[in-house]
Length: 382
Image 1: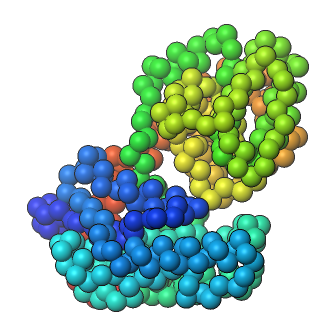
Image 2 (image 1 turned 90 degrees about the vertical axis):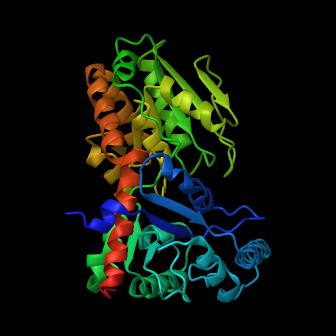
């Protein structure tokens, strides 16, 4: 039941979004910069991006120090590394007119509700990415502090939310999941998807990923060559990668094309033209590309990990595999052996993108969380 405040007034978020002079490795900055577009997808939700200069300079200094330390193999004190517990400019916060802080959980803001948007605690995945136990424990400690300080905690998947509920069971009732707001995510027409899978002369496969090794290109190439022998003349593979984590030797085949880079629009066009996206990553924190493929009416093949299982509805809306050549090959051959199952699978993925991940859906969910945070703040609930 909506309160009168929810019906009659907008909610404005303040988002900490420093100007980066040095491009960070993650895509949080890019995601934050896209948030103001949310007004195009729902009424009653406004976004103000942080404009103060000093926090941006501090963030860039910490980022530069951390990068230099990593490259020179020198220890960098925790205080000089990028932080999730920033102090905000209170003057900028007043100028914003915001009534909810979203994203970071500042240590010096006590007069507004705080929605801390954070990441999961998947310890094995953190170890696999090179983090030591001390680094993992430090990140868990930060998350516990921000959980206790914030009125709501949001993550981009229910699997991630569950990891924080396990970390802080006493605070589980204020932990929520909300998909990424992807303003560029465009849903193909259902008729287009149906026509794409209507007796195609060629089955078009696609691999997209800057880090080709981590995202499973060696396994994809082995699977493609095995399938190409059994289905000669039926398959095409397009590889789009800059090989950022090391070169991968591509076989010279007439039905294999390679592009070192592509714009977002070019990738979207490749998705629409493709029947199957093959990206069985060794490790994937989330995977926007799976959502883009599903929205374009392509079948997504992903690594069988917690977040990807959630995206693909446990395999009902795509294909889940272990990131090795043999299971990738087996899954691709099974799909090709039963072409009548391709369209229903693609439509289930397309429907999930429509119902769960479309920007209109996410914008409405984000607005509701803003009102909920305000109500918790007024009630004095932490």
